[in-house]
Amino acid sequence: MSTEPRPASMRSPRLPRDERRAQLLSAALEVFAANGYHGAAMDDIAETAQVSKPVLYQHFPSKRDLYLALLDSHLAALTELTRSALDSTTDNRERVRAVMRTYYEFIAKDDKAHRLVFESDLVNDPEVASRLETFNRGFAEAIARVIAADTRLPMVEAQLLGRGLAGMAQVSARYWLEASHDLDLDVASDLVSRLAWRGISRFPKEA
Amino acid sequence: MSTEPRPASMRSPRLPRDERRAQLLSAALEVFAANGYHGAAMDDIAETAQVSKPVLYQHFPSKRDLYLALLDSHLAALTELTRSALDSTTDNRERVRAVMRTYYEFIAKDDKAHRLVFESDLVNDPEVASRLETFNRGFAEAIARVIAADTRLPMVEAQLLGRGLAGMAQVSARYWLEASHDLDLDVASDLVSRLAWRGISRFPKEA
DNA sequence: TCTGGATGCCGATCTTGATTTCCACGTGGT
DNA sequence: ACCACGTGGAAATCAAGATCGGCATCCAGA
Image (cartoon, rainbow over all chains, first blue to last red; front, side):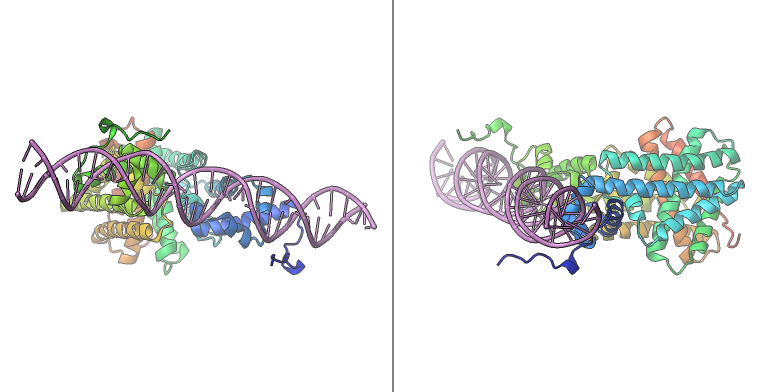
């Protein structure tokens, strides 16, 4: 009556530790992106990776740790992408264009990693909140420096605007992805980056 | 050994159904806003309302229904606030100012209702997602009409920009609330609304 | 004032679903 | 052939949502 052991063909082949870990991360991303943290069960992730649950726990001490590992990795990637976009030119207008395009490309990636970064349902966890806040601060500050370079605004106010523009990029890109896919990525990101640039270039200190 | 019935002084006084319901909603908002949907336990809400759990379930069939009721109510309120801000003038520049200010005021309210609307951790629930999407669409379309009135942009593109500006308002206001409270509400919202207005006014169709 | 019934309230418990762990088994290298 | 280690089925554990049956309170009508 007991269940037979899984035949060899269905067992997961033995893998070196790093490869297995990478595969698990990939499966976890897929499930988390599709269902969110709370909607994802460890069973689902194990099944997606075609592995049993204990294997999961040999690589990550808990579901939360698994999630954090993923978040860290993709936040680091996005940070690097935007940094490189910022360094790709010295013309501020072109900088805005490049960063906006980078954001749109990140969101359009079909691994859906943006769901972790921009639509996490674990924002109330202090660790997650702190990582997201660090990322957002860094990004907003980079924009704020561009603004301060083009205007005479003090840093406090430039940062507020930086946050606002970051929000504009993120929200508009998410909408574009969901609803407005008849617009080409370039067209949409150029449109929004023009909106942003018109807003900030030679921003007057007083009304 | 059995626990004594709670003395009369500790029992919650009998309330007419509607008042009790209102009180429960208020307690629920407090807990949900502080901890998010998943971080909030029905026990917490009951305790905050100084009531036992069955009372909660006599008014709301489930935790999710309670949350949806709250969300509906505050989404409706915010919708009405922005509609009224839009109708408060016919000058588009003033419209942007008024709406931005309304957003900042909504976020500054100390009932923290904005945590439900802008930081919900239940976005993966279809009912929640649909309600939020309806709100966002309505808001973005209102902005898109303003944009279309001031430019020659087609509605598809105006809507993308509308979403972007909505995101700018929301994200910048959340940042202002958390970190930048040395700036006055008026100063901050005016600053961001100027950024928005400079971006959209007489937006050129081509670069 | 007294009484019956309806309504509101509570302690205690049930139930479910998901994370985490235990222990035996197979597999591949030496 | 052996043994160390990766693997999986099944079960322990636990938190939290939901419920059950009885008690208290208020009000209408005699």
